[in-house]
Image 1 (spheres, rainbow, N blue to C red):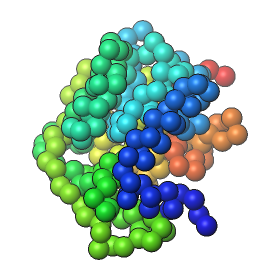
Image 2: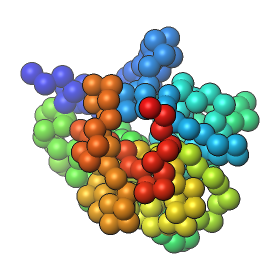
Image 3: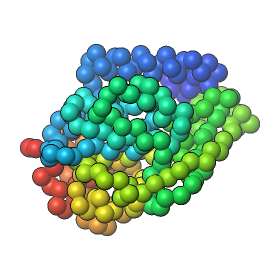
Image 4: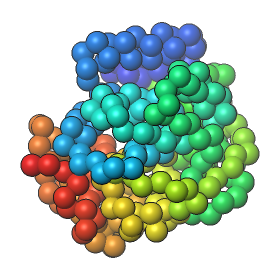
Length: 252
């Protein structure tokens, strides 16, 4: 029996389980000083110049914020989350930290209003799967990912959100993380000038369109596995990218 599909089935019927699980996982990670994804261990090698920051696109429940602070505690973080509910929760959690700024908007190749699609199964919102791409939002929940899946109980709710271009912000990023359920290439296109100017280390949830856009401009892939970075490969879930002029972003 596969464990995660069973857990998601329980979670859909008993929503309080998610808050309990997320809270327990966060406390455990903090106690053990571990990130939620091992890719973030690479940040221990990140070279940060004066005035630079980290940009977290797709903040969700703050997992990346905690991971960045674990390895770069003094680095200012700008986190983007289009869901007002999640953004408000993040402000409550990090509101006392001057180093963390929560932006309640999405990022795209243009400033406009967009529909955010939120998959809801048995009245349980899967906010981590929300996307500006309806197919991305609706397609992940199925019989393979949720035990006893019944498509008649799946709904996709729509909320109008504001999106901005990353280039509209006066940031100097040393690190850029993007996890936005299939919308990664749109985010990159809206920040092309910033990327060319500052050459940050990028951590991207694997996405073919975004990979093609970056490699087409000379950025090189690095996969993190077994405590090492492998040149030219894509990671299991996430991949790092360095620009032609950003090869000195990491220490040896």
